[in-house]
Length: 352
Image 1 (cartoon, rainbow, N blue to C red):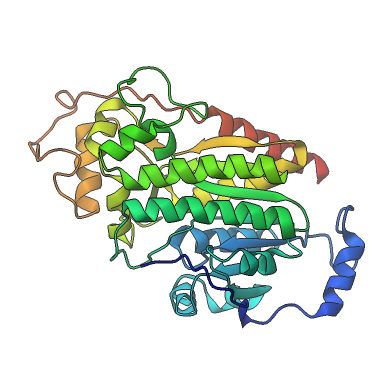
Image 2: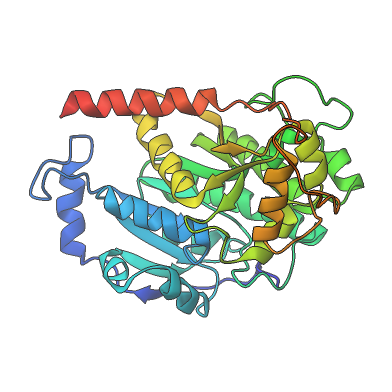
């Protein structure tokens, strides 16, 4: 499934834009508290890429709940049907627009991002049905898409802000260096991931690094959210196949105390907190996870729930008791994200 296109295409609008008269009123509010005729709720326009993904759809829902105007980009017209399965009709009707803008087409991205206060880039490659896998080629496309998204944000967004979805995989694979705490300062070793064919990890590393370089060049304010294995509110995840690329090497992550999961709703909420925190100077990387898998029994329950028996446990399906199931020490730290959430919560409560 190749998503990158080199030809020039116009942005196809699947859901109409808000009438121009609205934008005249919106522009009058820029730089203030957006308290004019739009009401007390902020009505900043933000754009979410890949709204047909599981995370993208939850992020759309979270942003709408916070009162933002939301524009969504999709790679292909057929993705619109996938999105409608994930987003309710009521939420679809609340969207400012849904447009086709391929991450390989810089001009179409510029058109899609024009007038936006921030861009939420969830992924350059999405396969909701989990049939095409994640290959070395996909890792390359992930990085190329990231470069285009940041450049388009710098060229066309009304305010140059991007909240970029990365992964814990971009931090946890450090080759032979298996000691010490893994936090936002840690980067996975590209050659180690390439040598072990950890293609999703390689894609997330290279895409995030490209994003940081391009953001500096284009003067885009950037935050990256590096989340753990994405889980659904009702376990297991409805698209189990998409978990397989993440869990390649999962047995080693388990042994090293770096195998972590997070609920999709919490990840979406973390993105919104990160965006709000930009008003107070926040930037940089943030690790996002809720649960570290610390016992073999937990790993067995996870792999069974995902219908991947033996992937993490190596087939050790013995009956384990609390006494025999030794706890693994976690090496992950998400304290930086916790401080960001506390900061935003305090500032918001002070305004009320």
